[in-house]
Length: 584
Image (cartoon, rainbow, N blue to C red; front, side, top):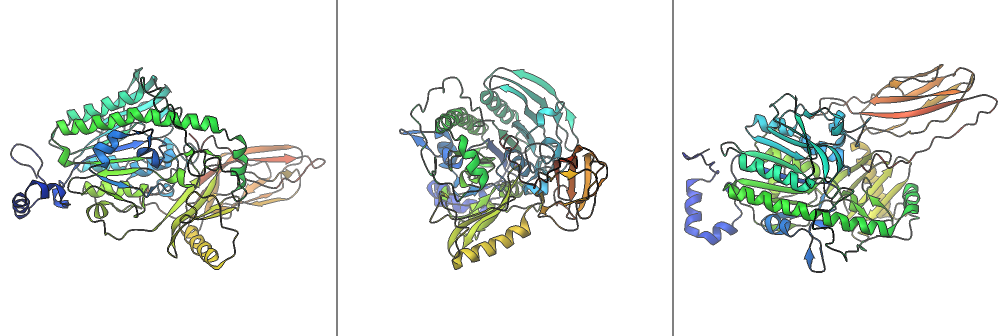
């Protein structure tokens, strides 16, 4: 509803307004009142890249890393200290947010690149932007869109009134941006501009320009996604030497005993370089200085428009990042530092506070935005609006975590017997179990213990994980075949809903071998003589995603060598480890 001068009115009844006026200005400010929120508020969503949760509130030597975040959003908002992502990797999380709050296996974007992730796997025809545009919002995306977007030809997705997406990034001072004005429901082609301005400053200016140019008649949605503090985490000019003495030594950084961890952790730990990790951590918080200034600039732009009390601000990151915990660096791991992200929401009518108990996840953010905008949409998430308005609202105590890349794992983090546990199953067959109350830094996995509590936790969580996890192919290596000899190898999968359908979608099996489409069995007798083939298998299940309308699927590139009978050796299949695609 609007007044005659065009300002949007909030859903405050006449009686409520009189009570608030009689109570005086102090009560007006302190009272948590959902009626102060407009029917369709403006929404500013700020998404950093690879920012671990603690860096948002960290200080060093008396200097805060993000003072503007504290002053503009945390001090007037709700800080969720128990916020997590289900799949701790850039592309799956961004797809989840852009879709409106779905798990990775329901968006179909499982990893950062093909065959199971990246821009080409994201179905954008019914995205959050499309829904918001249909609901009357002016929509803008500024910054990083989705991984592998650089492979497109200036593509502007449907739903975005204004689009300024990073395309090719050669450095923080040399990059291309796609600019365009999209339609409500069809993609268009934009134009490409080249800039040499420091990237975060450029993006912040585009974001504030959008706010200042907004009509005031329609609500707006701004999706602001700076690249910082993603590697190489280059600071802005003037920030190169700040936090010179910062040296992270917290939690389980440099952990010595890794005998309880999976083999891949022990293997990757052999390349542990504490000096380089310390330097990168310092560069990350330096690169956040410009992001922090951009937060102040965006809030001030909203303030200048007189829209501060009509605007909801949401700040978070796409995943966390390890700074040497378990002698690892990066993301895509099931550990706390990888899945734990900052989350702050400033909403008119909500009393500022810290929520340190409710467990919220990335899928809740899309659900919250949909709820705020009045979109009638059921997703995998739960709208945080009831919790924002009433801290006593009952909330979840557990959630699913998954990794679909070269490191395939799935697990559950949740409560059992009055304690918080994390249970993880790896495609290699290895397991982990942590009592996060007694062992918050995950130094000692208890999965091999045989006491009653551990057995009960594993039984309970294992059943829940098996019922909820997404579809994954377990095999990455095949045993060799022998020319002229009978060969039979059944492909193995996790998750999904039977029945399944298998196919070869690229390349071909060695002559003489065939794939059973219903069982995934590779069988036959390859032609005599040495040879082999490289091919890509695809498996689909029988589900239908509420978002994409498609079944779950997983694809796997495989090599199958055919040995000469005289020299053939049977090689047992094993999980390969290549972190390159998971760490982008």
